[in-house]
Length: 293
Image (cartoon, rainbow, N blue to C red; front, side, top):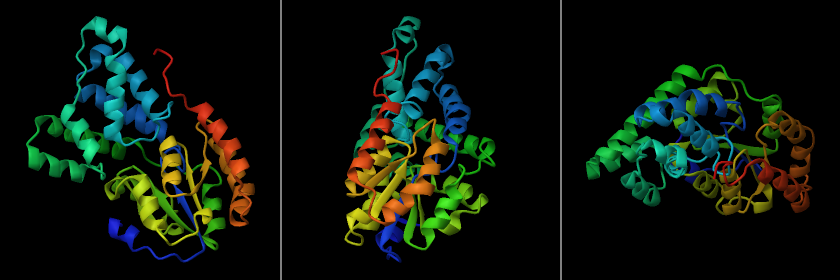
């Protein structure tokens, strides 16, 4: 396992750096994780069976089909409940959707939004609400470990990592818990191609990139690959370029990355014009508002 200090003390081995998100970007794991693990556990732990149809729609919109795709699980819980609370169908049924004020306060002040930091906050505050949130989060981890197995990388991910290896440092930049990240990268034998695997417990994606790149690389030599707007924001915060893996068209975008973009990036031909063209398609794929709003 890596630590935050590994990010802070990272020493470049190459002139270029590539950060890569994991869930939904390298692995086609977003759908099974969200639909088979996160959502069912959320409905069970928060007693939402009476509005399960709408809870599923809200959860899947936030985590799969919107500009919040890929956000931290604790933020996703707040966002999904905010959408769900406003649905007329839910109001008519009289189902009370938790507002989770303690969680909201914690997410606004904490940067390492993971279970270890949440446990520390529970010890400090003795919040029953946060205890329930932790129970929910631990149950999700158990479900993911049980259900999401043997999911291979998208085609040409491995080949892309190999192609990058001789010219660029590569790190994993993810909001997935460290343990799950390590398992997925190790069981597919691709951890060997990355210098660091940074997950939820090591801070936000923005912090991962900023800590690794700080005064160590020319910003034009840093690229973030991701499938969610949060990945784009992390890239921008680090002054890096961004290459989107567009949800629903992942194989085609990995093909293009392998065949064209790697050489363009390393040859300093990945221009702002090309990036903007891809970002326009990326933004069109992930709306800000659900159809029911």
